[in-house]
Image 1 (cartoon, rainbow, N blue to C red):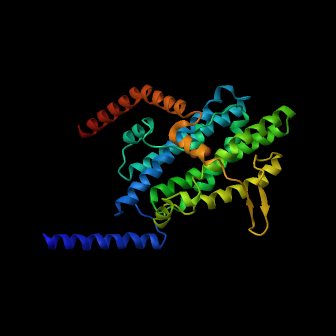
Image 2: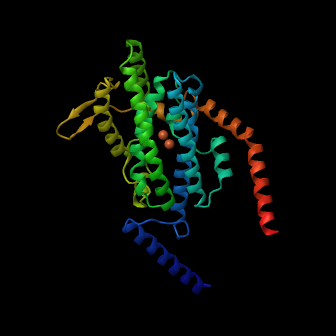
Length: 321
Ligand SMILES: [Fe+2]
Ligand SMILES: [Fe+2]
């Protein structure tokens, strides 16, 4: 008995050393490789939360599909919203390679047991919001996700490479939409500024709480799941967005925002972290609406899942025959 335990411990040590060596040379961990249980669990949680965000994120913009101001804008928006569905699918598939079940993850989303990005709990009140979401929300997503292309888990990293290419298109379409509105009437310019005012702070919250209040960051960085801290990414996003805002002709609603030549970065104010905590707790302006919509869509799609399973069963039995 003691002998077996000693041997098991030895094997466990060897496996762990192998895992650490892969991380040390910045190589990928693949689905069949041994991994510590904590690594697997952290990844499932992060990838699932990311997948849920893509799917719930279709709603705020989907809200404007039937009211797009032209056929061209409608086609662009439709393509963008469909891309987000695709992102959700790649990510649920990546989570499945870790042993998670799609049905279980969906259940956890619609029961509120797993979270999605807080940003999608804010309403879209004008067509300018479609542009602002593309520019700032997809822009913040790119800052978060480009480093994830180098994340240590293979299927997640590869999904991120494709997703980031599409997110770049999303950001450009948003910026182009806003630029078009800024060349329009004073009312259109006013709509853009009002939209930017509403989305700036929630966009900064997308990077998560400040580093000293983010207890999981150190472990996630040690495992190569995360490559930069929340505050580093937030800074990068602010530095990237300021010149874009200047070119667009809008301002950000932050009196503390200014260039700091000594640091070589912009100084900026802190978002309202109490508001962030409330939205994460489910008390944001649209939390209940987003989940209710997702739940209804899931229930209404039950017949599609049943038909697809029945078809798959029949095909498998035909192959056997
Ligand atoms: Fe996306
Ligand atoms: Fe996107």
